[in-house]
Picture 1: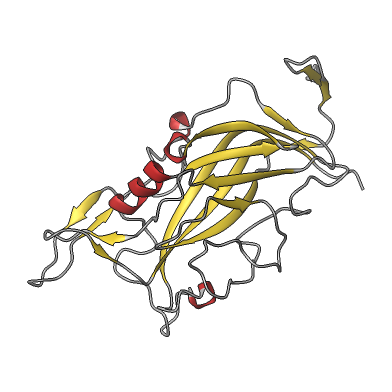
Picture 2: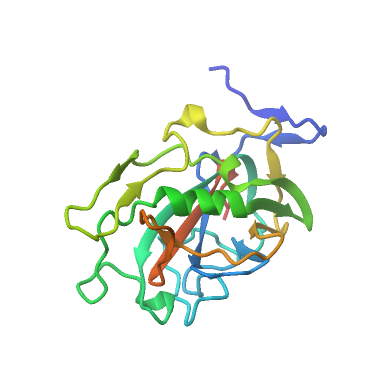
Length: 246
């Protein structure tokens, strides 16, 4: 049977389709209200190491297989390669301890989810899109660099709308996703980005002016800061991945 065995990249490099799979890499960061970090980096840690968090976090939580599937923090392993066709951030809103320790973020009765969680709020999600850039760094060079909203999630639930409170004085709540949850909405790179074996890389969330990014409720009287929220951003590098040969 005729099959594709190799293809040539725009720079002339030839890629052979041996042990290549459609298996995205992903990594997670935690954002807490009031942060001013100029940069928060993903793909820099392995399972069992602390999850990167904003400078407003106290004790950081330890990562699990839900947070990352990176084998070598900050680099490819020597027998792996990656062709990145798209970058897809996924967003979750959760409650956290008022001391801002991300270790307290859970879904138990001791720290229960608020109404609507883990669905993000429209105003906070749009604030993150307005305030942050996403930058893909490979071997100390920027290969993707655009506003966070440029990178459509392209999957997941689609909870758009606004819920009015049933009690006088209660806070209303919006529900949103980062664009249309459909593959057709994903911004695919015109030229895939290649990460070779042992090559260093990371994905940065960048706050260029180091503005203070505060999470607010959506009250009719005006913004009211919410202190006990964390936004968990899980970032996918979607494309073709060469599996380890050993």
